[in-house]
Image 1 (cartoon, rainbow, N blue to C red):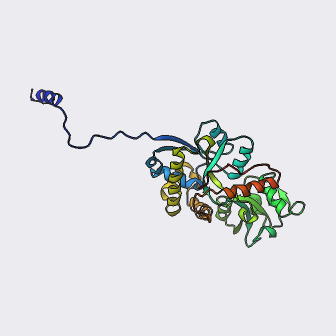
Image 2: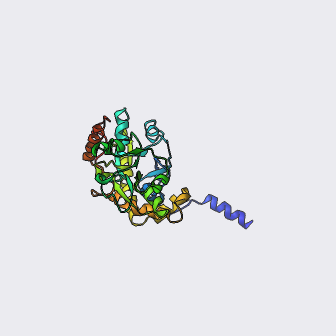
Image 3: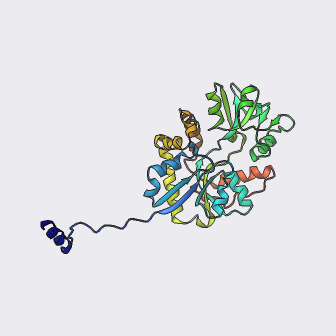
Amino acid sequence: MLLSSLLFACAESPVVSDGPAPQPVPTLKPVQLALNWYPEPEFGGFYDAALRGLYRDAGLEVTVVPGGPGVPVLELLAAGRVDVAITGADDLLVRRAKGLDAVAVYAGFQDSPVGLLVHAPGPARYEDVVGPVAAEAGSPFQQFVWARYAWEGKVELVPTTGTIAPFMANPASAQQAYVTSEPCLAEAQGASVGFLPAKEAGWNPYASLAVVRGGEKAEGWVGKFVSASQAGWEHYLVDPAVANAEIVKLDPELGGGKIDCVVARQAAYVRGTAGVGRVEGARFVELAEALNSVGVVVSGEGAYLER
């Protein structure tokens, strides 16, 4: 009876509070971020921003969508199925020439991670390469390097196999590679290797490049995404532990310390010389000239939101 009386009294008595009225929970803007490859340290800063709540603090609910071979991230962007796509600057210009309306807003890698994997102690320069060289025949990088150094008929071009086995078997060979991949694999197998960055040959597209639809480049959420991504990358360069744990969870192949090699090798390419995340118009103009020199007709104008 006493309990019933208490419940009745509580129901009839108004609730009085001296504190401020509760504030409505802000609505977060959903953002789908599509990667162009599997979860790897090349996307570490984006994972860092998501895991540490930097995107949420900026009012964004960012979902990182892993990619893989053949995943058409730019097509997904154009179709409105994702809001941000990660790609390379050369791919962006080629697709824009075919009608894609998309612009770059953030560069995860200031310098291209592409280059040539060579056996140590040398060659030390592209001019010193004698071959054979395994490269992706017909790719802009392959065409550009062969043209610049007049390798046609001098340096043997052999097909890539998707592995480093042929490279490991031939001490005179070189192989098109990513600084974050094949060098670490070769060292893990006991090889002593060197790496000739594509930048040294004059080929330097931005990589891990975040792009958005052209019609949305001025929307407020884009600036918030860029600022949070910048903070994520700057933190990741100093302390990658949280993001790396998630990346290894998603891609166990990077476990056993393998991820440490990747993180160490990519740091200088992320930082570059202009600053973390920078996107500069002059870089797109230079890239367009490089592509045009090998017959890939593109324009760098309007392909970026400079910052």
